[in-house]
Amino acid sequence: MERANLEARARALIEAETEVFRARRPRSAAAHEEATSGFFDGVPQHWMLDWPTPFPLVVDQASGAELVDIDGNRIVDVCLGDTGAMFGHGPAPVLEALKNAGTRGLTTMLPSSDAAAVGRLLVERFGLPRWQLGATASDANRFAIRVARAVTGRAKLLVFDGCYHGAVDDTLVDLVDGRTVSRRNLLGQVRDLGELTVSIPFNDEAALEKALAAQDIACVLAEPVMTNCGMIPPAPGFHAALRRLTRAAGTLLLIDETHTISTGLGGYSKVHGLEPDLMVMGKPIGGGVPVSVWGMTQAISDRLHVIRREQSGHGHSGIGTTLSGSALQLACLRACLEQVMTEEAYRIMQARADRIEAGFKAAIAAAGLDWTVARVGARLEVVFSPVPVRNAAEARAAASDTIEAALHLSMLNLGYLLTPFHNMVLVSPALSEQQADGLVAAFATVTGRLAERRAAA
Image (cartoon, rainbow, N blue to C red; front, side, top):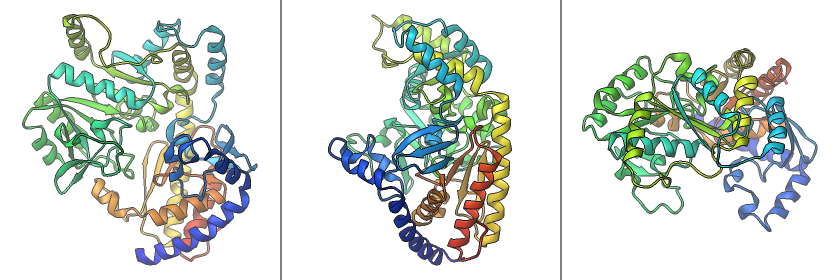
């Protein structure tokens, strides 16, 4: 089916679905209008306007896999705070930890009684022997990059085109005509980020080898499966080449598992036997509470101890923030690792994701669309391409903001919330079989409308 015809139908669908959204949410419209008197753009974070809706959906309650907006509309959530609530909204063990932490002190700048257990759990679950805490994955990536530069004595960082590793300046680059440049939409960017960051295509072993040849790269920062420019799986053998080439060049490998923790217990690295020097996880690791973790090998830890001893004075290392490592974070981390992020939770997530993947593929085929479904564990992505994409250039070429907006808005009006930035579905253990089947039926309805074919509601 021609893309132009599909996008024309998508535009008509957006127009109709926008009116449906407006009619069902007068209170959300009024609340947004009222918020404009205080918040910039009327929202706590300006990007909350990036949803394909005429005004933001205002949430009254979030529990398990369901949201209720202030107009009383009930919505099945497969966005899940774009991973912050990957195990569902308000897991009971985390809520209990929050309640208890409130009576025992929230932050003291000292370890709490949960610290030893959390350290042990992190080592057992993710493999690396030494860990530290941050507030967000952005923080953790900053700290891990700083350590990589300190222990290697090198300044440069290598990332893959299309990456996203939070609000880390060094990573907010694009590959344009063979050059690494600052992303054009950055606000207040005063330094050319291409001076110290090298960007290359994902899955390009030759480009990787060439970039590492000068032996001036401190670390490669990578998601094991790229998830922020559509979903881009690694080519067979690419991770083996990445590990071999970084070791040969004296470059550290930093794996960001913030999204790919959806793969299974221990994340993609544990499931697939990767051997990172440094690892970062944020978002769901604390069950929705702002906390992140970053780990390192014993060799890096030993070298870091030497560097710390050589410093005059203490503190002000550029690593850590006042509220990081708090009693609140440790309590929620422990609860999530022990009772929420379990083998049984992943079993349920994978079973539901199997059901959704099969249903999406059947709906795509029934509608005659040349799309594929990419997947990493409990995370699925609808890609507007007949074959899996291999890099960001292919992902960008396959993308369509118009079709994406029509899909998201239509699915929302049918009672299912997808992520705002691309076609991601995240499956929590709180999602029932009935909700998974309802999601598939809604997707079949929307793809049928886009393709002008009858689909089961």
